[in-house]
Length: 161
Length: 106
Image (cartoon, rainbow over all chains, first blue to last red; front, side):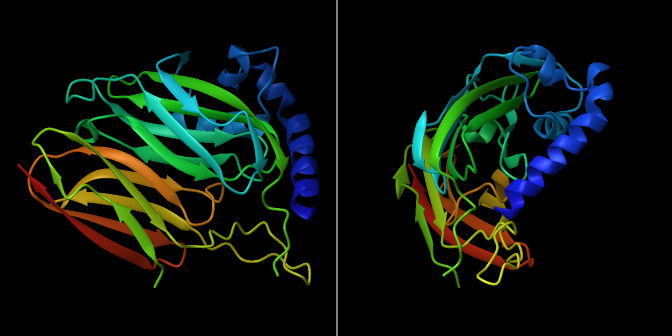
């Protein structure tokens, strides 16, 4: 429970401090979907990783179960529409989450030798939340998508026996 | 030594895209979890995974505590030539776990 209390306190403080800056157009991801604001910590993390470049919707597909019982291990597959040739391929796929103690999940580095741009892994989710995937293509364009997952038993809360 | 599980096809046709599945037994301790006494257990995770194909890097992953324990990663690569796929996992202490698999390309 400690880390959750801490994280909500942090995000509130950071939200107040960052509100002005955000209004100034800091979080690009926020502007894409103003009606359903992404938590500020994730927007900040995304900005740090991919910079201010424009995030476009499409090309990337994120597969996650919409409802998971146990947040300790949640299967995920992310794939991107790309011929995966020397001329046009996926360079990196970034994964982020909104409500874990940290917004980062993973970065996968791919290239023409990948043949196919599809990666699977298993993640932890501390709460019901959105998971965001961003693909960085060889032409420099960024494509994003997100999926909402409902978690009934959160990760990170169990005690050590 | 952590146990690893690797699934690589033994043979493939030249140019074929093959799927590789990897798993390593590791607690992926997040650093956010209290033990019985309430103290946080220090972070200890695999933070980097690299796959090389005949010494050329074909896939790499940077991992964070949000990756589940016993990290499973599945990805693909083009079967270019017969040889060795080498896998390395690096943990927070800098310890490297390594594994290899051979492939015959026809």
